[in-house]
Length: 67
View (tube, rainbow, N blue to C red):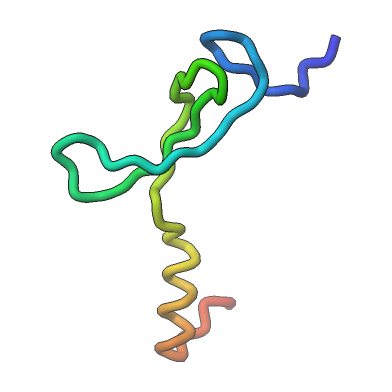
Protein backbone atom coordinates (compact mmCIF):
# COMPACT_ATOMS: atom_id res chain seq x y z
CA UNK A 1 0.00 0.00 0.00
CA UNK A 2 1.42 3.41 -1.02
CA UNK A 3 0.94 6.12 1.63
CA UNK A 4 3.18 8.72 -0.03
CA UNK A 5 0.45 10.48 -2.04
CA UNK A 6 -1.31 13.32 -0.21
CA UNK A 7 -5.09 13.07 -0.27
CA UNK A 8 -7.89 15.44 0.59
CA UNK A 9 -9.27 14.79 4.08
CA UNK A 10 -12.81 15.33 2.75
CA UNK A 11 -13.06 13.50 -0.59
CA UNK A 12 -9.87 11.37 -0.39
CA UNK A 13 -8.79 12.35 -3.92
CA UNK A 14 -5.18 13.42 -4.65
CA UNK A 15 -4.43 16.83 -6.13
CA UNK A 16 -4.22 20.29 -4.64
CA UNK A 17 -4.13 23.85 -5.92
CA UNK A 18 -3.41 27.31 -4.55
CA UNK A 19 -5.78 30.23 -4.96
CA UNK A 20 -5.30 33.83 -3.91
CA UNK A 21 -8.26 35.43 -2.20
CA UNK A 22 -9.01 38.46 -0.05
CA UNK A 23 -11.21 37.43 2.89
CA UNK A 24 -14.41 39.41 3.43
CA UNK A 25 -13.83 42.70 5.32
CA UNK A 26 -10.07 42.27 4.96
CA UNK A 27 -7.48 44.48 3.28
CA UNK A 28 -4.89 41.78 2.62
CA UNK A 29 -4.61 38.71 0.40
CA UNK A 30 -4.07 35.12 1.51
CA UNK A 31 -3.08 32.05 -0.48
CA UNK A 32 -5.33 29.07 0.20
CA UNK A 33 -4.18 25.50 -0.46
CA UNK A 34 -7.25 23.51 -1.37
CA UNK A 35 -8.36 20.27 -2.98
CA UNK A 36 -8.65 20.70 -6.73
CA UNK A 37 -11.73 18.46 -6.75
CA UNK A 38 -14.01 19.48 -3.86
CA UNK A 39 -12.31 22.82 -2.97
CA UNK A 40 -11.87 21.91 0.74
CA UNK A 41 -9.21 24.23 2.21
CA UNK A 42 -6.35 22.29 3.81
CA UNK A 43 -3.93 25.16 4.49
CA UNK A 44 -3.42 28.91 4.37
CA UNK A 45 -0.21 30.74 3.42
CA UNK A 46 0.73 34.39 3.45
CA UNK A 47 0.46 36.01 0.04
CA UNK A 48 3.93 37.52 0.24
CA UNK A 49 7.09 35.46 0.78
CA UNK A 50 8.40 37.35 3.82
CA UNK A 51 11.80 35.65 3.71
CA UNK A 52 12.40 36.77 0.14
CA UNK A 53 11.26 40.31 0.97
CA UNK A 54 13.65 40.50 3.95
CA UNK A 55 16.60 39.32 1.85
CA UNK A 56 15.76 41.82 -0.90
CA UNK A 57 15.59 44.67 1.64
CA UNK A 58 18.82 43.56 3.33
CA UNK A 59 20.61 43.53 -0.03
CA UNK A 60 19.46 47.09 -0.75
CA UNK A 61 20.70 48.17 2.69
CA UNK A 62 24.00 46.29 2.29
CA UNK A 63 23.23 44.08 5.28
CA UNK A 64 24.70 40.58 5.22
CA UNK A 65 22.22 38.07 6.61
CA UNK A 66 24.59 35.09 6.14
CA UNK A 67 26.64 34.75 9.31
